[in-house]
Image (cartoon, rainbow, N blue to C red; front, side, top):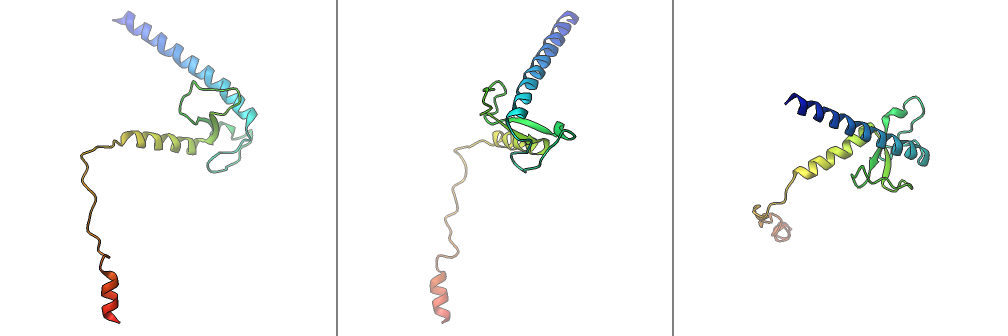
Length: 119
């Protein structure tokens, strides 16, 4: 069991290193391609706070990294977190067919007649 745990730890460590290397490559390219401005809130960045600017994959596929950057946008860490929270929230919702029907009562259906009676 200990042997398997060590092997799993090595696999996880290697996967993390590969992900960091891949992220470093496309982040550097994105920072060269695009202005250092958040695509949502328009906050500008410089060398002092550049670590707060992150690359967001528009199609949410981190392996889709075209050289022209067409799948990327730069977002500040706050907007990036919000973007992923929206996706998680959306994925948590399911469309069930057994939902209740919409209300059929219209409280304003007879409003015109009621207003005419007052005049």
